[in-house]
Image (cartoon, rainbow, N blue to C red; front, side, top):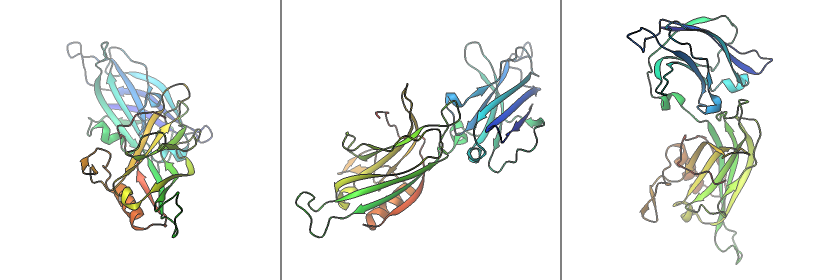
Length: 305
């Protein structure tokens, strides 16, 4: 089984073009008549959104379909560095229970697009779960600093300090718009407080998948002891003026104890770099600490922007 096609990136057009020519010797879903109704579906992972999907037409009653279609993604060469091209072949079922016939995956990092001629690619069985194939949702670069109370605290401020959160930038976010970009912003809560007083947001940056906000959130009236049992939740969203904003990824920064005031909670769940950054902030008051954090694909958060 195989797929014949080419991957081409004309630099002047700012687009990736996938030419799907044909498939050969596909498996027969209708074994009695020795035929299938195949089509090809294409994603640029990690973007698995509806707007990021491209499809060929369905070819009826054949194991050797000829498509001769060009599928296009509007994206820059820089944007391709973190992407994986995923082509999968499916049998189209009239009741929606489509059958998987094979796939080709191609990492695009450092790929040289110098040959537009079609090549033969052997179709593979699915070797790993889709969740693993999709992989990272991108990265978030964050700085933290706890500013302790003044030596002679005012009556209003008492003996409490403030937490400063510098949201520098995100890298390689999913492109969820039809033009191959997103309109991202970052939202913050200092848990367990999810009220309006806790919510802070960066501006929306248009048409980019690696936004540089350099925006600072400030949470006043906190102590180091309090922060040891609290959690900073940072989530990235694509802004949509006509529909609900789409979740792009997030992090939670805390000590990962799983508890708040002795009670089990699901938001004290940090690990790895998340926990390390929070611990460094607690240990180094009045100094900036920074880390590049992998975005989680899910935090079970609701869009209440």
